[in-house]
Length: 127
Image 1 (tube, rainbow, N blue to C red):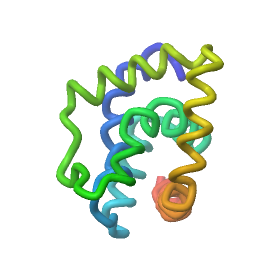
Image 2 (cartoon, rainbow, N blue to C red; image 1 turned 60 degrees about the vertical axis):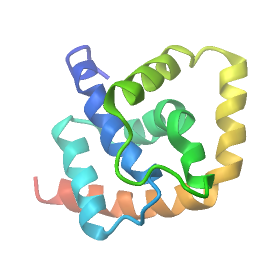
Image 3 (cartoon, rainbow, N blue to C red; image 1 turned 135 degrees about the vertical axis):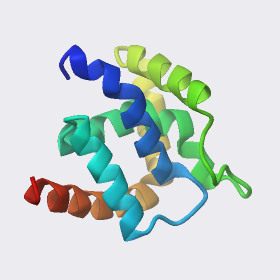
Image 4 (cartoon, one colour; image 1 turned 30 degrees about the vertical axis):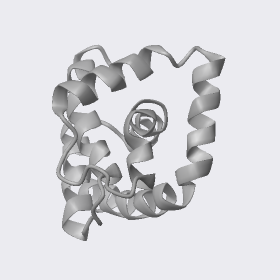
């Protein structure tokens, strides 16, 4: 990611976090996320990496909660957690935590990314 696009990181975190709310995303929701990623010049592979290492470790357990957050994650809290995760990528303990979390949520995450990938392709095709 370029230095100027680091300023877009909070927007990317916010839209990707919507996949971890205790609600079911619609096609319109995936299109919105894809559009915001496109506006931030964030491609598919980069978005997947940001999700895996920055967003999912911050909010992924919400998917396993019986009464999870369903409206939106508080912005400053989300930014603080994702920024901390971004800085922790070099730690093997952090990487282990990320991989373990993915084992717990991989079915839901895979389904979300299937739909989001389609939406990203659709948005890219209309450029």
